[in-house]
Amino acid sequence: MKKGQLTPQVGSNVAVFVLLLGLFLAVYVLLLPPEDREALLYNTTEGDGSQGLSSGVILSQSVGTLKPADNDEIIHRIDSINLYSKEEPKITDLAYSLHLEKSLASETKRNIAFSIDNLESIESVNLVLVVNRNKGNLIIGLNNIIIYDSKASGLVNIMLPKEILQDKNSIELSVSSPGLNIFGKNAYDLSNIKLRENYQLTNTRESREFIMSEQESGDARLRFILYCNINRQGSRLSIFLNNREIKNEIISCTTAEREIEIKEDYLEKGINTLTFQIDRGDYLFNDIRLKIKTGLNGAVNYKFALTSDEYDGILSEDREAVLSFEFNDDNRKKATVSVNGKEFSIDTNDVDYERDISRFVKEGNNFIKITPLDEFSIDLLSITLK
Image (cartoon, rainbow, N blue to C red; front, side, top):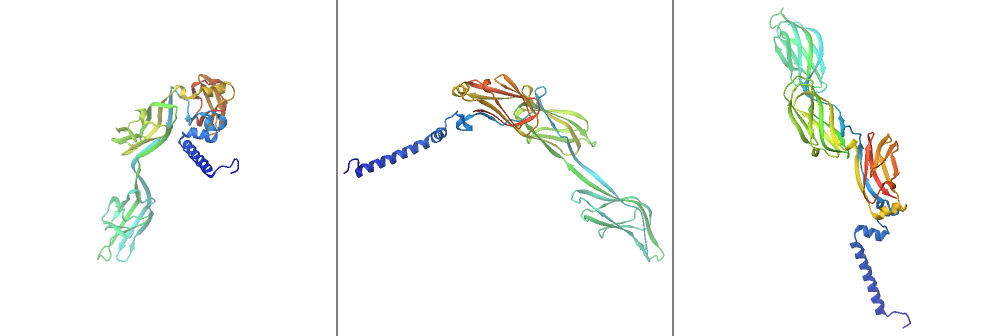
Protein backbone atom coordinates (compact mmCIF):
# COMPACT_ATOMS: atom_id res chain seq x y z
CA MET A 1 0.00 0.00 0.00
CA LYS A 2 1.31 3.38 -0.95
CA LYS A 3 2.01 6.05 1.65
CA GLY A 4 -1.08 8.24 2.36
CA GLN A 5 -3.48 5.79 0.77
CA LEU A 6 -6.42 4.79 2.99
CA THR A 7 -7.44 1.23 3.32
CA PRO A 8 -10.93 0.41 2.05
CA GLN A 9 -12.11 -0.06 5.66
CA VAL A 10 -10.84 3.37 6.77
CA GLY A 11 -12.32 5.11 3.71
CA SER A 12 -15.67 3.53 4.39
CA ASN A 13 -15.60 4.71 8.03
CA VAL A 14 -14.79 8.29 6.94
CA ALA A 15 -17.67 8.33 4.47
CA VAL A 16 -20.07 7.13 7.14
CA PHE A 17 -18.83 9.81 9.55
CA VAL A 18 -19.25 12.56 6.96
CA LEU A 19 -22.76 11.36 6.18
CA LEU A 20 -23.76 11.24 9.85
CA LEU A 21 -22.28 14.69 10.44
CA GLY A 22 -24.24 16.10 7.52
CA LEU A 23 -27.49 14.58 8.80
CA PHE A 24 -26.84 15.96 12.29
CA LEU A 25 -26.22 19.48 10.96
CA ALA A 26 -29.36 19.34 8.81
CA VAL A 27 -31.53 18.28 11.77
CA TYR A 28 -29.89 20.94 13.96
CA VAL A 29 -30.70 23.70 11.44
CA LEU A 30 -34.30 22.53 11.08
CA LEU A 31 -34.82 22.60 14.85
CA LEU A 32 -33.53 26.17 15.21
CA PRO A 33 -36.07 29.02 15.76
CA PRO A 34 -36.98 30.67 12.41
CA GLU A 35 -35.11 33.90 13.12
CA ASP A 36 -31.92 32.05 14.16
CA ARG A 37 -32.15 29.72 11.17
CA GLU A 38 -32.50 32.73 8.83
CA ALA A 39 -29.54 34.46 10.46
CA LEU A 40 -27.41 31.29 10.08
CA LEU A 41 -28.39 30.57 6.47
CA TYR A 42 -28.42 34.14 5.12
CA ASN A 43 -25.89 35.76 7.44
CA THR A 44 -28.36 38.34 8.76
CA THR A 45 -28.22 39.82 12.25
CA GLU A 46 -31.24 41.38 13.94
CA GLY A 47 -31.04 45.14 14.25
CA ASP A 48 -28.64 45.56 11.33
CA GLY A 49 -30.54 47.77 8.95
CA SER A 50 -28.05 47.10 6.18
CA GLN A 51 -29.17 43.46 5.98
CA GLY A 52 -32.83 44.08 5.04
CA LEU A 53 -35.74 46.39 5.69
CA SER A 54 -37.58 44.05 8.04
CA SER A 55 -34.75 43.95 10.54
CA GLY A 56 -34.64 47.79 10.70
CA VAL A 57 -38.34 48.59 11.16
CA ILE A 58 -39.08 49.38 14.81
CA LEU A 59 -42.60 50.79 14.29
CA SER A 60 -45.11 50.17 11.51
CA GLN A 61 -48.69 51.39 11.84
CA SER A 62 -51.65 51.90 9.49
CA VAL A 63 -53.15 55.09 10.92
CA GLY A 64 -56.09 55.90 8.63
CA THR A 65 -57.98 59.19 8.62
CA LEU A 66 -57.12 61.91 11.14
CA LYS A 67 -59.34 64.91 11.87
CA PRO A 68 -58.89 67.98 14.08
CA ALA A 69 -61.11 67.65 17.14
CA ASP A 70 -63.44 70.19 18.76
CA ASN A 71 -63.70 69.87 22.54
CA ASP A 72 -61.96 66.49 22.35
CA GLU A 73 -64.69 65.06 20.09
CA ILE A 74 -64.61 63.98 16.45
CA ILE A 75 -67.81 64.94 14.63
CA HIS A 76 -69.04 62.70 11.81
CA ARG A 77 -71.61 64.52 9.66
CA ILE A 78 -73.92 62.00 8.00
CA ASP A 79 -76.15 62.55 4.96
CA SER A 80 -79.87 63.02 5.54
CA ILE A 81 -82.25 60.05 5.39
CA ASN A 82 -85.85 60.11 4.08
CA LEU A 83 -87.93 57.06 5.06
CA TYR A 84 -91.52 56.52 3.96
CA SER A 85 -94.29 54.04 3.34
CA LYS A 86 -97.10 55.92 1.58
CA GLU A 87 -99.46 56.01 -1.35
CA GLU A 88 -98.76 58.47 -4.12
CA PRO A 89 -101.42 59.07 -6.80
CA LYS A 90 -100.82 59.78 -10.47
CA ILE A 91 -103.72 61.54 -12.22
CA THR A 92 -104.05 61.36 -16.03
CA ASP A 93 -106.70 63.27 -18.00
CA LEU A 94 -108.21 60.87 -20.54
CA ALA A 95 -110.93 63.10 -22.03
CA TYR A 96 -112.69 66.36 -21.26
CA SER A 97 -116.15 65.28 -22.47
CA LEU A 98 -117.72 62.33 -24.29
CA HIS A 99 -121.14 61.66 -25.81
CA LEU A 100 -122.39 58.08 -26.01
CA GLU A 101 -125.66 56.80 -27.53
CA LYS A 102 -127.29 53.69 -28.88
CA SER A 103 -130.46 52.98 -30.81
CA LEU A 104 -131.64 50.08 -32.93
CA ALA A 105 -130.22 51.78 -35.98
CA SER A 106 -126.94 53.26 -34.74
CA GLU A 107 -124.39 53.35 -31.92
CA THR A 108 -121.82 55.84 -30.71
CA LYS A 109 -119.14 54.48 -28.40
CA ARG A 110 -115.63 55.59 -27.41
CA ASN A 111 -112.28 53.84 -27.01
CA ILE A 112 -109.50 55.31 -24.87
CA ALA A 113 -105.97 53.89 -24.74
CA PHE A 114 -103.64 54.33 -21.76
CA SER A 115 -100.39 52.82 -20.44
CA ILE A 116 -99.22 51.74 -17.01
CA ASP A 117 -95.56 52.61 -16.49
CA ASN A 118 -94.85 50.48 -13.43
CA LEU A 119 -97.40 47.69 -13.21
CA GLU A 120 -95.45 45.79 -10.50
CA SER A 121 -95.52 48.71 -8.06
CA ILE A 122 -99.09 49.84 -8.60
CA GLU A 123 -101.50 49.59 -5.69
CA SER A 124 -104.76 50.39 -7.49
CA VAL A 125 -106.13 52.09 -10.61
CA ASN A 126 -109.44 53.95 -10.74
CA LEU A 127 -111.48 55.42 -13.59
CA VAL A 128 -113.16 58.62 -12.43
CA LEU A 129 -115.79 60.50 -14.45
CA VAL A 130 -118.82 62.77 -14.10
CA VAL A 131 -122.21 61.80 -15.59
CA ASN A 132 -124.12 64.87 -16.83
CA ARG A 133 -126.90 63.04 -18.70
CA ASN A 134 -127.95 59.44 -18.39
CA LYS A 135 -130.43 57.12 -20.02
CA GLY A 136 -129.97 53.39 -19.90
CA ASN A 137 -126.88 51.68 -18.48
CA LEU A 138 -123.30 52.83 -18.81
CA ILE A 139 -121.12 49.94 -20.05
CA ILE A 140 -117.35 49.99 -19.53
CA GLY A 141 -114.99 47.37 -20.91
CA LEU A 142 -111.29 46.98 -20.03
CA ASN A 143 -109.14 45.09 -22.53
CA ASN A 144 -112.30 43.53 -24.08
CA ILE A 145 -113.72 42.43 -20.69
CA ILE A 146 -116.87 44.10 -19.33
CA ILE A 147 -116.17 45.47 -15.82
CA TYR A 148 -119.16 47.84 -15.37
CA ASP A 149 -122.77 47.67 -16.61
CA SER A 150 -125.12 49.77 -14.52
CA LYS A 151 -127.14 52.94 -14.32
CA ALA A 152 -124.70 55.74 -13.41
CA SER A 153 -125.15 59.30 -12.25
CA GLY A 154 -123.11 62.10 -10.72
CA LEU A 155 -119.50 61.36 -9.81
CA VAL A 156 -118.55 57.78 -10.71
CA ASN A 157 -115.42 56.07 -9.35
CA ILE A 158 -114.73 52.62 -10.80
CA MET A 159 -111.80 50.46 -9.69
CA LEU A 160 -110.10 48.69 -12.59
CA PRO A 161 -109.22 45.04 -11.76
CA LYS A 162 -105.44 44.66 -11.42
CA GLU A 163 -105.53 41.18 -12.92
CA ILE A 164 -106.85 42.58 -16.21
CA LEU A 165 -104.42 45.49 -16.42
CA GLN A 166 -101.48 45.35 -18.82
CA ASP A 167 -98.65 47.68 -19.77
CA LYS A 168 -100.84 48.98 -22.64
CA ASN A 169 -104.61 49.08 -22.09
CA SER A 170 -107.85 50.04 -23.78
CA ILE A 171 -111.10 51.25 -22.21
CA GLU A 172 -114.31 51.05 -24.23
CA LEU A 173 -117.31 53.16 -23.12
CA SER A 174 -120.79 52.51 -24.48
CA VAL A 175 -124.46 52.49 -23.44
CA SER A 176 -127.06 49.73 -23.29
CA SER A 177 -129.63 49.06 -26.01
CA PRO A 178 -133.11 50.66 -25.79
CA GLY A 179 -134.60 47.23 -26.28
CA LEU A 180 -137.62 46.73 -28.56
CA ASN A 181 -138.40 50.45 -28.77
CA ILE A 182 -137.83 51.13 -32.46
CA PHE A 183 -137.63 54.86 -32.00
CA GLY A 184 -135.98 54.75 -28.58
CA LYS A 185 -132.42 55.80 -27.85
CA ASN A 186 -130.19 55.56 -24.76
CA ALA A 187 -127.51 58.20 -24.27
CA TYR A 188 -124.86 59.43 -21.82
CA ASP A 189 -122.97 62.68 -21.64
CA LEU A 190 -119.71 62.33 -19.66
CA SER A 191 -117.10 64.88 -18.58
CA ASN A 192 -113.78 65.05 -16.70
CA ILE A 193 -112.79 61.47 -17.49
CA LYS A 194 -109.59 60.78 -15.51
CA LEU A 195 -107.37 57.84 -14.62
CA ARG A 196 -106.05 57.71 -11.06
CA GLU A 197 -103.07 55.40 -10.44
CA ASN A 198 -102.15 54.79 -6.82
CA TYR A 199 -98.58 53.64 -6.15
CA GLN A 200 -97.35 52.32 -2.85
CA LEU A 201 -93.97 53.98 -2.34
CA THR A 202 -91.79 52.27 0.21
CA ASN A 203 -88.37 53.10 1.55
CA THR A 204 -88.55 52.06 5.19
CA ARG A 205 -84.88 51.20 5.86
CA GLU A 206 -81.69 53.02 4.91
CA SER A 207 -78.07 52.86 6.03
CA ARG A 208 -75.10 55.20 6.13
CA GLU A 209 -71.43 54.33 6.66
CA PHE A 210 -68.74 56.28 8.51
CA ILE A 211 -65.11 55.50 9.26
CA MET A 212 -63.85 55.54 12.83
CA SER A 213 -60.13 56.30 13.02
CA GLU A 214 -57.50 55.20 15.50
CA GLN A 215 -57.67 58.58 17.21
CA GLU A 216 -61.29 58.01 18.31
CA SER A 217 -62.09 56.15 21.51
CA GLY A 218 -64.76 56.30 24.17
CA ASP A 219 -68.53 56.75 24.15
CA ALA A 220 -70.46 58.59 21.44
CA ARG A 221 -73.58 60.74 21.01
CA LEU A 222 -75.90 60.52 18.01
CA ARG A 223 -77.91 63.66 17.25
CA PHE A 224 -80.46 64.35 14.49
CA ILE A 225 -83.51 66.49 13.72
CA LEU A 226 -86.73 64.63 12.92
CA TYR A 227 -89.23 66.12 10.42
CA CYS A 228 -92.64 64.59 9.76
CA ASN A 229 -93.79 64.89 6.12
CA ILE A 230 -97.22 63.31 6.72
CA ASN A 231 -99.26 64.04 9.82
CA ARG A 232 -99.57 60.51 11.11
CA GLN A 233 -99.16 59.28 14.66
CA GLY A 234 -97.74 56.07 15.99
CA SER A 235 -94.83 55.14 13.70
CA ARG A 236 -92.10 52.94 15.17
CA LEU A 237 -88.49 54.05 14.75
CA SER A 238 -85.60 51.60 15.14
CA ILE A 239 -81.94 52.62 14.90
CA PHE A 240 -79.09 50.13 14.54
CA LEU A 241 -75.32 50.53 14.78
CA ASN A 242 -73.38 47.66 13.20
CA ASN A 243 -76.58 45.56 13.31
CA ARG A 244 -77.04 46.18 17.05
CA GLU A 245 -80.18 48.04 18.08
CA ILE A 246 -79.48 51.30 19.92
CA LYS A 247 -83.01 52.77 19.81
CA ASN A 248 -86.59 51.49 19.49
CA GLU A 249 -89.45 53.89 20.12
CA ILE A 250 -92.80 55.19 18.89
CA ILE A 251 -92.35 58.61 17.27
CA SER A 252 -94.88 61.35 16.66
CA CYS A 253 -95.09 64.15 14.13
CA THR A 254 -93.14 66.70 16.15
CA THR A 255 -90.11 68.47 14.71
CA ALA A 256 -87.41 68.21 17.35
CA GLU A 257 -83.72 67.45 17.86
CA ARG A 258 -83.07 64.05 19.39
CA GLU A 259 -79.97 62.64 21.08
CA ILE A 260 -78.95 59.04 21.75
CA GLU A 261 -76.04 57.97 23.96
CA ILE A 262 -73.92 55.14 22.50
CA LYS A 263 -71.51 52.96 24.48
CA GLU A 264 -67.95 52.51 23.23
CA ASP A 265 -68.31 48.76 22.64
CA TYR A 266 -70.95 49.40 19.94
CA LEU A 267 -68.31 51.14 17.79
CA GLU A 268 -65.61 49.54 15.66
CA LYS A 269 -62.33 50.86 14.28
CA GLY A 270 -62.70 51.31 10.54
CA ILE A 271 -66.09 51.12 8.77
CA ASN A 272 -69.26 51.40 10.86
CA THR A 273 -72.84 51.15 9.57
CA LEU A 274 -75.69 53.29 10.97
CA THR A 275 -79.22 52.18 9.98
CA PHE A 276 -82.60 53.94 10.41
CA GLN A 277 -85.86 51.99 10.02
CA ILE A 278 -89.59 52.83 10.31
CA ASP A 279 -92.72 50.71 9.88
CA ARG A 280 -94.92 53.42 8.29
CA GLY A 281 -95.27 57.16 7.72
CA ASP A 282 -93.02 59.65 5.96
CA TYR A 283 -90.07 61.10 7.92
CA LEU A 284 -86.92 63.07 7.17
CA PHE A 285 -83.90 62.62 9.45
CA ASN A 286 -81.74 65.67 8.92
CA ASP A 287 -78.53 67.18 10.34
CA ILE A 288 -77.32 63.76 11.53
CA ARG A 289 -74.15 64.08 13.63
CA LEU A 290 -72.20 61.43 15.49
CA LYS A 291 -69.76 62.76 18.09
CA ILE A 292 -67.09 60.35 19.34
CA LYS A 293 -64.63 60.98 22.16
CA THR A 294 -60.98 61.40 21.26
CA GLY A 295 -57.69 62.42 22.80
CA LEU A 296 -56.51 65.96 23.28
CA ASN A 297 -57.09 67.86 20.00
CA GLY A 298 -57.61 64.57 18.20
CA ALA A 299 -54.04 63.35 18.69
CA VAL A 300 -52.99 59.71 18.21
CA ASN A 301 -50.20 58.15 20.25
CA TYR A 302 -47.89 55.22 19.54
CA LYS A 303 -45.05 53.58 21.46
CA PHE A 304 -41.84 52.04 20.13
CA ALA A 305 -38.71 50.67 21.82
CA LEU A 306 -34.98 50.86 21.14
CA THR A 307 -32.53 48.29 22.49
CA SER A 308 -29.19 49.40 23.94
CA ASP A 309 -27.37 48.16 20.83
CA GLU A 310 -29.76 50.04 18.53
CA TYR A 311 -29.41 53.22 20.57
CA ASP A 312 -25.61 52.88 20.70
CA GLY A 313 -25.65 52.64 16.90
CA ILE A 314 -27.56 55.93 16.73
CA LEU A 315 -25.21 57.62 19.22
CA SER A 316 -22.18 56.52 17.22
CA GLU A 317 -23.86 57.87 14.08
CA ASP A 318 -23.65 54.47 12.41
CA ARG A 319 -27.43 54.45 12.12
CA GLU A 320 -30.30 56.91 11.85
CA ALA A 321 -33.86 56.69 13.19
CA VAL A 322 -36.04 57.79 10.27
CA LEU A 323 -39.75 58.65 10.57
CA SER A 324 -41.75 58.07 7.37
CA PHE A 325 -45.35 58.79 6.37
CA GLU A 326 -47.15 57.41 3.32
CA PHE A 327 -50.23 59.47 2.46
CA ASN A 328 -53.07 58.49 0.11
CA ASP A 329 -53.36 61.78 -1.81
CA ASP A 330 -51.48 64.95 -2.70
CA ASN A 331 -53.74 67.29 -0.74
CA ARG A 332 -52.28 69.51 1.95
CA LYS A 333 -51.37 67.77 5.21
CA LYS A 334 -50.72 69.83 8.35
CA ALA A 335 -49.91 68.32 11.73
CA THR A 336 -47.77 68.66 14.83
CA VAL A 337 -45.57 65.66 15.65
CA SER A 338 -44.08 65.09 19.10
CA VAL A 339 -41.40 62.48 19.79
CA ASN A 340 -40.80 62.12 23.54
CA GLY A 341 -42.16 65.65 24.05
CA LYS A 342 -39.98 67.26 21.36
CA GLU A 343 -42.19 68.80 18.68
CA PHE A 344 -41.88 69.64 15.01
CA SER A 345 -44.43 70.54 12.31
CA ILE A 346 -45.49 68.89 9.06
CA ASP A 347 -46.90 70.96 6.21
CA THR A 348 -46.73 69.13 2.89
CA ASN A 349 -48.64 68.21 -0.25
CA ASP A 350 -46.40 65.25 -1.03
CA VAL A 351 -47.61 61.65 -0.87
CA ASP A 352 -44.46 60.68 1.08
CA TYR A 353 -42.74 62.37 3.99
CA GLU A 354 -39.47 61.45 5.73
CA ARG A 355 -37.50 62.97 8.63
CA ASP A 356 -34.49 62.00 10.70
CA ILE A 357 -35.59 61.84 14.36
CA SER A 358 -32.34 60.43 15.75
CA ARG A 359 -31.82 63.34 18.14
CA PHE A 360 -35.33 62.87 19.62
CA VAL A 361 -35.16 59.18 20.54
CA LYS A 362 -33.76 57.43 23.61
CA GLU A 363 -32.93 53.95 24.82
CA GLY A 364 -35.95 51.93 25.97
CA ASN A 365 -39.55 53.07 25.43
CA ASN A 366 -40.24 56.01 23.15
CA PHE A 367 -43.51 57.80 22.39
CA ILE A 368 -44.73 59.56 19.27
CA LYS A 369 -47.86 61.75 19.12
CA ILE A 370 -49.49 63.13 15.95
CA THR A 371 -51.93 66.04 16.28
CA PRO A 372 -53.77 66.83 13.00
CA LEU A 373 -54.39 70.45 12.04
CA ASP A 374 -56.24 69.44 8.83
CA GLU A 375 -58.18 66.33 7.92
CA PHE A 376 -55.98 63.84 6.06
CA SER A 377 -55.21 60.11 5.89
CA ILE A 378 -51.98 58.25 6.66
CA ASP A 379 -51.75 54.90 4.92
CA LEU A 380 -48.55 53.93 6.74
CA LEU A 381 -46.48 55.38 9.58
CA SER A 382 -43.07 53.78 10.09
CA ILE A 383 -39.88 54.36 12.06
CA THR A 384 -36.86 52.63 10.60
CA LEU A 385 -33.23 52.29 11.58
CA LYS A 386 -31.11 52.99 8.50
